[in-house]
Amino acid sequence: MQKLGTRDTLVDMTMTTGLDGDRLLPLDPRTREIARELYAVVADAPILSPHGHVDPRMLADDQPFADPTELFVTHDHYVTRLLVASGASFAELGLDSNRSAEPRDVWRILAANWHRFAGTASGYWLAHEFQTLFGITEELAPENADRLYDRIASTLADPDFRPRALFDRFRIEVLATTDDPLDDLAAHAALAADPTFTGRVLPTFRPDAYLDPEAPGFAERIARLHAATGTATGFAGYLAALEARRAHFVAHGAVSADHGVLEPFTADLDAADAERLYAGAIAGTLTADEARTFRGHMLLQMARMSVDDGLVMTIHPGVRRNHHTETFRRFGADRGHDIPVRTEYTENLRPLLERFGMEPGLHLVLFAVDETVYSREVAPLAGFYPSLFIGAPWWFLDAPDAILRFRSAVTETAGFYRSSGFIDDTRAFLSIPARHDTARRLDAAFLARLVREGRVSLPTATRIAHDLVDAVPREVFKL
Image (tube, rainbow, N blue to C red; front, side, top):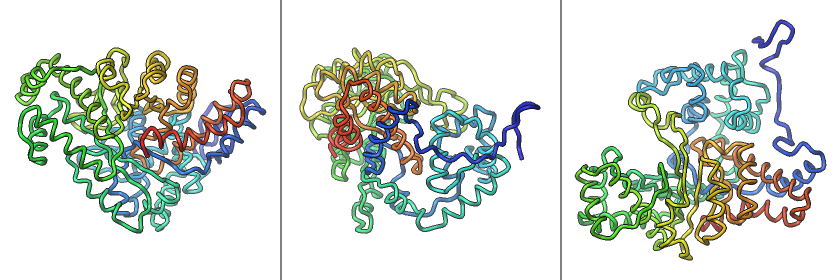
């Protein structure tokens, strides 16, 4: 049995540590009692997940999950990034092009480094999944790694652990995916036409690579866009092609368009300047400043299209993608080295908001991984513009302490009803209930403190707790 500590203090790394029923709730007994009451109101409420990255083909095909490593490690960059930081190689984790690593060996690496996940959001979510889905209450460690791997693997063979069965078990009412504009959405169509599947799986229009002239293969991608839509070349035809693909998404149930940008810069150009920059984008001759201006104009055009077709516009800015060039070159995107940068909304969004901020049909949801913008910019903007809503803590901030900081930062300025409701933003299907449960507990904790301080009545807090998981996301995302 592995031991960790000094000669006088030894810790059993395989100790049993079941989930605390009061986890994440306040320590003060009276405040905790109120939080328990508020959490009980929403604990079993259906899950609305209007932004995420689960592959819809998983539900359309409904095949058993391959193995514990595929399920918990390989596709979860929250997990792999910390393992790489702790010394594991991409090859050892099965993330190289050969994919030659044995799944059990990768699992053993996770087990050997499990203590490094203590205090992290990903460690908390994994512990929640292990216990609630597989009845595992002991800490993962080298000594039990193979036994727990076999236990999970045998459970995955059970029909009750197929993706659709878990979708029902998780009480997911709505699940949105993230999709390329030229995706035929066949998986979504198959799910919608299947009478045995009663959930809603909605596509989301994600056009980033079609709006950024500095994205690799931009001109070729736009050529395919024109070919798919039968539109004329030129800027007007380009806009028409994007509008046609948005209409295709709307016809397949989409409610939102998502924009993952480095900065939320917008620019309002006249027709001649837009045409000139578009020609340069196709020719690959734009300067860096011209490319930025073109991106800014296209983000504004996306808002115009959302006014016209009703798609909710979500903006996820402030992340420098693929920070380490050699890692990106050898192993590709989504390998854990996307790093936050500073974000500015007030001036960057002003051209867009000058034109469309008061449009009744526009719903614009602003996310951030730069916490400083919550109280300084996002909450004040949402407290004025009827079109604008505060996105939930996202990516590096969807963690217990950060979620509480978020609530403190935005509530005094904009209240609860100018926020989006929780967004899980995950590729890890099994983590969805853990993430939503985390948010529900923390909102209950925050509301309980307000009740205890005499700032909100208990009946009002009860209504807010329920609305944050139901009425608020339904309204914001037009569900």
